Image 1 (cartoon, rainbow, N blue to C red):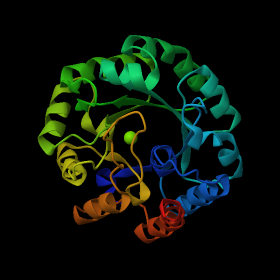
Image 2 (cartoon, protein in one colour):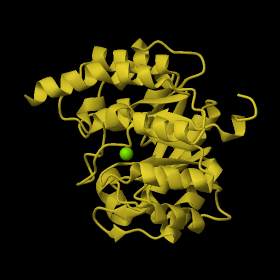
Image 3 (cartoon, helix red, strand yellow):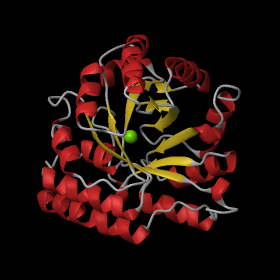
Image 4 (cartoon, rainbow, N blue to C red):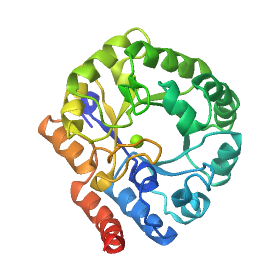
Length: 291
Ligand code: MG
């Protein structure tokens, strides 16, 4: 952290949440705890540990409270949780999450199917959640899904994204996370997206959440770096996807993002070898089940 500090890239590891959420193989709580602990050892500034959503909808993450209770917290790492509503926030607060994330969609079709309400209804639900989190002293991430394309509605315009970002900022979120939920973006889409957000939120104030469905995630991240983005989500082993988004493949792999950052001279503070050690037992577990 010296002259290069302004160039540093912040990586949020989302494998335990966005990664495992899409895996049908039930992963035992102990394995999740070991995964998070191993990721902590790799030095991530933030790990999205789990989600306090309806357990019937996302059975893989029904043990969020148990996982939070058992992990060893490394000073310097934020342990965050996804919360869809006030009930979820209560769970996250009880579990002593360091940060919470709410999620909206830039497309109406995805909003209806993924969050059980229109964009408007979902945004209206955020008010009390964001206020409650901030009263408890927790920072709030605001996810925007489908910032380039929706699996139901097709192309999503930067103007649609901008209107949702405006609303999230007005609701008081601390961080805007832009998600190419189905991995449809190419680098020019990323440039258009940020062009459309000019005067609303600066690239450096956003986090970009890429999926590698078409093998374009690293190229998109490279363009985003050129545009000034310095915060990304990724998943160890490229785990992930979204069970509510047909065609969604894994998140951009943490190792690929680390290689890109290293090649471009961006410090991340994350140890690639430790990430590889963290994901190995999970891959083994998922493979064993696939046989
Ligand atoms: Mg995702």
